[in-house]
Image (cartoon, rainbow, N blue to C red; front, side, top):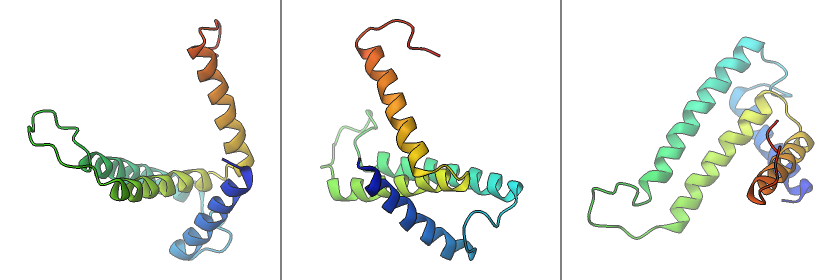
Amino acid sequence: MDLDLLKYLFRRQRYLQEKFHKLENYPKGMTEKEKEETFIKTLMFIFRETSEILDETNFKSHIKEHKSLDKEKILEEMIDLFKYWVNLCIIFEYSEDEVFDMFNKKSEIVEKKLLGEANVYR
């Protein structure tokens, strides 16, 4: 993902959170306790959205009749999940650059593991 696109997504989501929480410069107006409580609630929303994605698939192996996958509905649920994930980053004020860099760092570690390179664990 282009870093500029990531910055746009963060900026858009931060704006929506400022409106939702009625705080300018969200989350700077929150105490550490409020940030932690919001972080935990957001994680719970992520669990719920993950469940909603699963509900759109045929993950229950005991059910014989399989439904057709609705790719648009799955994408919609995945976007909900992504938006909550971005909220987690915003709550603890991770910058887009930090997220981008960590994504690339973790991807390099995974790639090394896949290639069988030794000592890729911290």
